[in-house]
Image (cartoon, chains in turn yellow, blue):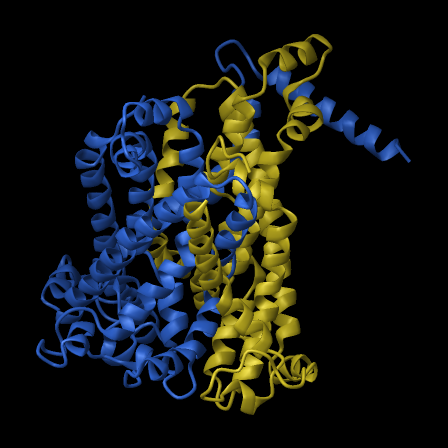
Length: 270
Length: 332
């Protein structure tokens, strides 16, 4: 009994350490400037300054940054789901020469560090005339080896009887993929889509180098620029951080069972 | 209402017919496979594989941008002779050594604690995983404020404990120098600024490891643990001799993934220090070094050479881990 109590105290302390920075961020977003930079720790604002949010959106074009991030994130997510559906189905269900070799090459690309491809890809984007365009932010990320791998695992898990039965009824591969197989691997699709969106929304280095105009900036770049700007006040910075984090936290709570279960390891039971 | 779908379905069926006619006994499903693979392979090929070779090619040229003179291995020789290059690798090494064992130990302890309880496990797991889904940039803004020398919470806590205030992310002096009161020279060991980044990373990425460890723990058959208990093994003996060996594939996977990730770290460095380099360049890791050469000095060839060396370092480390750690992994 005592041991269990100690265990819970320990776990609760860990949870507090994990969440307190977020709590401080969220409450500071509502503080006045004097409270925010007070040398003594203030947890709750004396008066909740809702106007901070208006001021943040006036101080930097966060509306535009959000539009860019959501647009890029949405298209990348759709792209990754579609390309991995097709490629994974081919690797899992179709019979063609060189299949094993090609799949091996796809898996090997996961080992190539992003930094090595950074400069060559920048040169390529420049030569394509894609600098400062959505194409530069979207196209290179519309396929992912890891997603193909995950989706292939899901397709491998489908009984082949389904396909045989469909074939007898005169259904081809394409129709089978769209009408029957894709709906059956929906959990894998959701996982792949979530990771694609998070990866796109949270990325910094790539958008940082392929965009320079304020109108093309995504939220992560916007936030770093905002934090470095002269005279930015801490309460507004925390306000901006809160609104940047909010969509991913909402997405996480809405879909956490997919996040925590499907890809991170089999056999998790809550 | 249904008409468009019926038309669409008809089109799909028509395509299937065409693919069906194209495939022969020798080609098997090749036509439709090509159609389905093309988009993914085109993107992975153009933006994933080809740049690797292009990077090696770029690294052979000197000067600014990509049109400089051919210098052969000149960039590589310059890197080997440069202090900044070796210091950036040292920063990466400190970072890997500071984050990986600590994150693993903490995550395993927490995951084992979660494994032992029944009530509230889902709640704690959700909370612990939270930092991992939030953007490192936004979280770094919060930590920067908490570690601010003038009004940060960190110095408020130190003042309460009776310790003199610190400069945290602005402190270029070594953490060993500060702890020993100056007996160790200020340049030795990681700077306090780097240690702050390490602490941030442990906080930001423990959740991922906790979830993976917990998955591994739940997959261990209960009987093994119980029979060890019946044979009189204590809690620590069970962990050491039963659970850890059975968990070794998980540890192995996490070790490989986190070494690769720590060699590629950029976001937290850049967002916490504002430029990645930190005070007196003491937080300039290899990735930041590549970025500064590329972005601030426009030395593309040199940057590509350093990137190629980083890639080689990662592959070498992964192979070494595979050889030496892989041997100790128990599979059932």
